[in-house]
Image 1 (cartoon, rainbow, N blue to C red):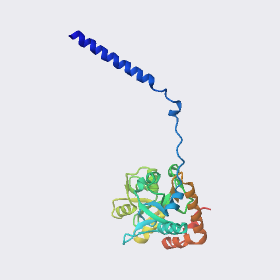
Image 2 (image 1 turned 60 degrees about the horizontal axis):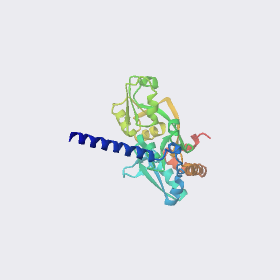
Image 3 (image 1 turned 45 degrees about the vertical axis):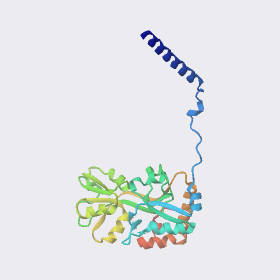
Image 4 (image 1 turned 135 degrees about the horizontal axis):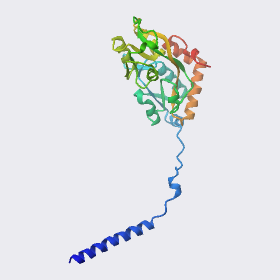
Length: 282
C-alpha cells in the first residue's frame, strides 16, 4: 500500500513538471521592443481646451496681499486678481481662481489641478526646472523686516542667534536657508501669521518680498521697517506647465499689450500708487 502511494506521488510530480515545461516552451520569446519606451501621445496644450470651455483656471495663495487675498467680505481681491480679470476679459474667457497650499502649488499645476499659477510667484532656477514662466510682470526683492523700534538688527549679519520667520515653500525660505547662524527658522502658511508673531515678539525678524512688506506697512503704519540689506532680487511671473507653449505665448502677448495700452498702469496705481512696470527690465 505504501509503495502504491509513493508511486502515485512520483507520477503526479512528474506530470506537473512535464506540464510546466510544455507551458514554458509554448510562450513566445520576449520581444526586444517590449523593454523600449512606447510612443506617448502628444502633450496637451491647455490653450485649446481653455478656448473651448471658455474657462481659465488659475491657482493662487489667497492670503498673499496685495497680490491675492480676502477682504472683510471674504471677496477675493488684489493686484493679480484685477490684472487676471482684465486679461481674461481680453481673451473672452472666464477666469476661475483656485486657492492652493503654496508648498504644493507647483505639484498641483503639474498634475492638472489648474492651468496656471498667478500669485506673485518669484522666478527661480529651481522652479524653472519644473515649469515655464511668462516674462516678468512685476519685480521684487527679498528683504528683512523688523519692528520699527528694533535697533539691534541692522543687517543680515545681525540675524545670527535670532529667530526668523518666513512663508513655507517661498523664495523667502530659500533666502533664509542661506543665512548663517540662525537660532531658529520658523515657517508659516501665510505671511500675516509671521508678521503677527514678529509684532508680538515671537520672532526677531521676517523675510519677505518688499512689495508684500510695503503693503502691510500701509495697514499697520509705524509698526515695521525694512532693513537696507537685500537678500535677492526676484522678478515674478505666471507659471504654466512645460507642454503649454501656446498658452505661454498668449499670456506673454496679453501682458505686453496691457502694459502698452495703460491697462497695467491703471491696476498697478490702484494697489501700489505707481506704475510698477517702470521697474521691469527691458
